[in-house]
Length: 186
Image 1 (cartoon, rainbow, N blue to C red):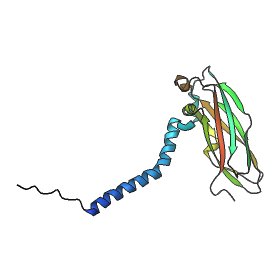
Image 2: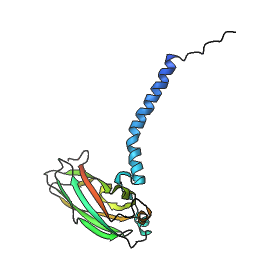
Image 3: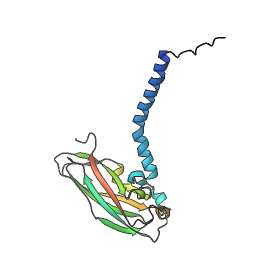
Image 4: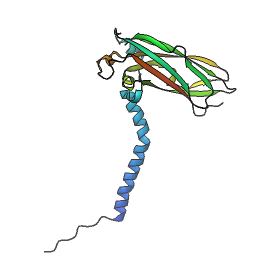
């Protein structure tokens, strides 16, 4: 008894399968950036800080562990702002709410809208550095020659003291870089 050869799939069916795979890969490429950002925000990966509400912060117990926060400020090339922390370091206790101020001035003759990007180092502390209020959450518009003091309210989560990779941290650097936001002029 002769066996029948297996039917061959049509070229059209193969084309549709590979076309679907290509579209799925393209979709994953576009989705990867937002997924990566969400992953970093959820885990503190790559020094990404966390956000907290005032109510959440009120529940945090202050530990006896001292911590120093170092502040760093930068502007992107071509952005004509002066931007600096009002104090370079701030001492406190893990779990304690603190406020720091940054100074910004637009040195041009036109308005500029900026957006601050941020991170903390060492990277393993990002999951424990919580911001309650920060100028980095929104675009900042400075008119020609305008100066502004910008606060950041934060705390370091005491859970850090239970993390073998972060518990011995004595200093955390909070770094900001201001970039020109899209549609900035005007």
